Length: 291
Image 1: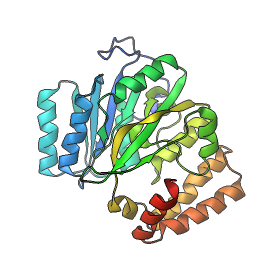
Image 2 (image 1 turned 180 degrees about the vertical axis):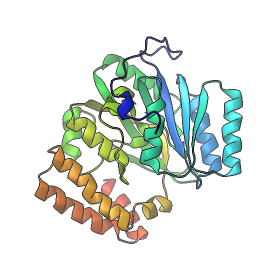
Image 3 (image 1 turned 180 degrees about the horizontal axis):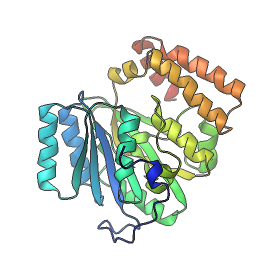
Image 4 (image 1 turned 135 degrees about the horizontal axis):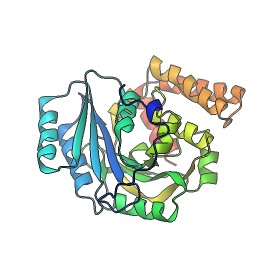
């Protein structure tokens, strides 16, 4: 990768004045791939450009070949917004690598993660930047999310711990952030090497960040409509996911969020669950994990 994460570890704050008016500026970072819902992609991008505070840049990483309809949507936004740019990758590399490729060329200090099928509340960036303005030592800020199906019907709300203390207590058991709701310090994330190349790349990044002293918080209200469904439960299964559970929990042990014995035990439990049928995981998710 030409603009590698490692090559930018010592990148200093740019003196540029950004149009958002926020110190260091803000980039909305999204990755898309072949199998995306084009209607949701259009709505997701609309929800960024209609926000009450606009990012200084919107960067979409194209993770390998995409549908012609997806390309047409991107071209439409490129023609309309000068601060919209794309980074095409020659072949599909997976979300972790795609996000690291994007992170390596981000010009602003702050990055707002946005997903191709999730709709941002129209005041999302305004509320998060307002929190950051009062807590400039924070490297990572997320929020609750409202989970919806593909028809937009509300299914549930995923709440997450709010303070650094409660986030660290929660982290050994479950992901303490909703990835699609997060804004983080791009300089800090580059310095620690970016996303690990595992299935739960965001969870792994939080472990690395908190393990290396990052201050973090979650805003106690939903700021993103996150699209879920049976596809999500199918994606969270299989041999690769089971193996990656052990990689993820090895990171936890490395940064002392769990003992090695505890990490391997918990990884084994999660690996077994990942191999269960999608319907079972869906039942477990909504009957226990959302309570």
